Image (cartoon, rainbow, N blue to C red; front, side, top):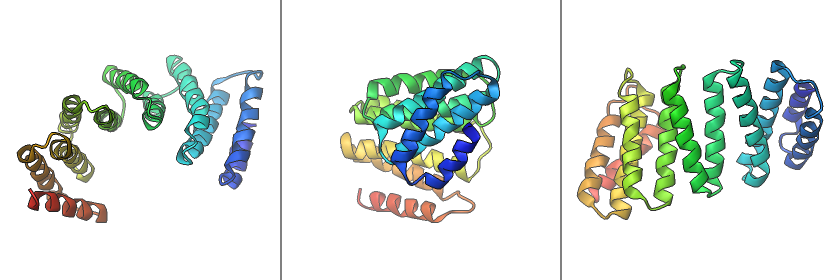
Amino acid sequence: DIEITLQNLAYCSNQIEECFKLFQNINNSYKYCEKNSKKMHNFAGANALIGKILFEAQMLDEAYQFIKTTNDILKELYEKNECSPFEFAGSSFTYANLFYQSGNYGQAITRFKELIDFCERNKFNNKQNILSMTYNYLGQVYVCLNDYEEAINTYKKIDEIVSKYEENDKLIDERADYRYRIGLIYYKFLKNNQEAKKYFEEALAFLQRTVNPTNETSDFIEVLESYINNL
């Protein structure tokens, strides 16, 4: 029973090898059980949980089968209108991010772009969060490939998305973060201090509009001020 297994997992989540064996057995038995929407959702949730545990333990090869299984099941459910687009999009992001973290940048680009296309074709709550996060990670992939022009263009897409929504502290952070990332590209890789300073100053200006700054926001401001003062 998937639900009982999930409860057991809560007690042994620090025993990764035991969890891994447990879910391998469940995966095998699941192939032969009668499938319905509830069972498929439960099974997807179980795979997502063990995949997350393995991913966070940097056991990426072991995490792959669980994260892929989750995504495959939710895709099947979504096509039957038995899964929300947000749930499927979240799973697709995790799947794409796995390729990125594994250094498989070609697959990461493909998966992130497929997710962007899916989001643009569908309407659902919090779509802008998925899109901005996807463009952020896609930009990081291009940086890893030394394709700085594509990275900059990708980061700029974030502003096109979040600027359509009512401003709040979270969106301010996102608009500041992507400017900071572009500034770093100009500073570290393109050696263009003028453009770097421009983007650092823009990022700082956004953060100074934060209504309730957190400790992380304050630390971010200090980093930006340090870069600006040294340029």
